[in-house]
Image (cartoon, rainbow, N blue to C red; front, top):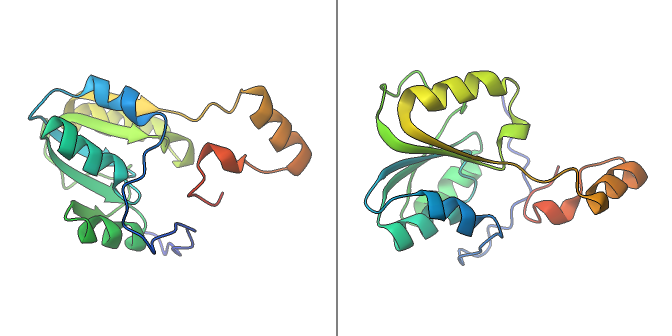
Length: 155
């Protein structure tokens, strides 16, 4: 694994369940009692919601050690790793692999997509809408990714 410096600016002072707008759409795709892996799981909020609403057997992978620690404090199965290097996961180990607003942060998204297809029967991928006019304006005027898209993440 790279010498990654975990400088994410998550607010981990509270383990309260937060919910982002896209969660309801992701959750719609997942069948009850499925085996699910969340790639780029962050603080585990989507994992927790899926476990509660769909009674899934879920596991997460994130490059951030602090994110993995928070997942574990929430009672979730999580491990540190690079999501485009899933060599230790057998073919078809999961019913679903989820990559929720993370694909745009991966160096080789085509590798991640191939890995997702290899390890799971179904793949769920979501992206932030960078084309929304307010986001484009923020990028143009401030020269950085818009904060409101992922309020708990520092770009």
